[in-house]
Length: 100
Image 1 (cartoon, rainbow, N blue to C red):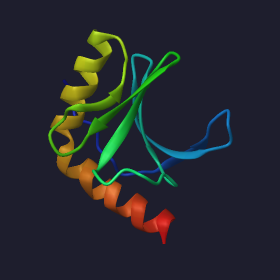
Image 2: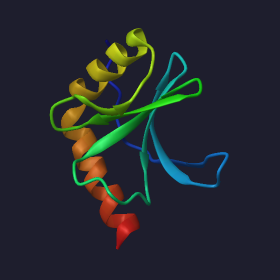
Image 3: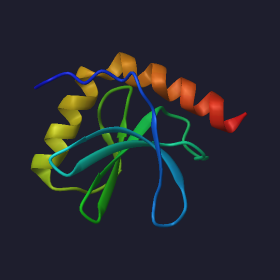
């Protein structure tokens, strides 16, 4: 699996007008961080594939909620765990930047 360097932020508005940070996109899988999300205390990312979405912990890689295809889930879990340190750093930057 190739490593992806998180040097740039790509902020996108979705269909509902919500702003998010696109972290990674490959094989139709989008790994994103919502910039103005409340209610989660654990660092996490959202994994979108087709019309489904799941939430993946950045602490231990487990899925917190949602459902996506098992093959896409496996890819997302591996990618997130391989890039865990950089993702945690980005998560802290995004949360501090947009929540304060």
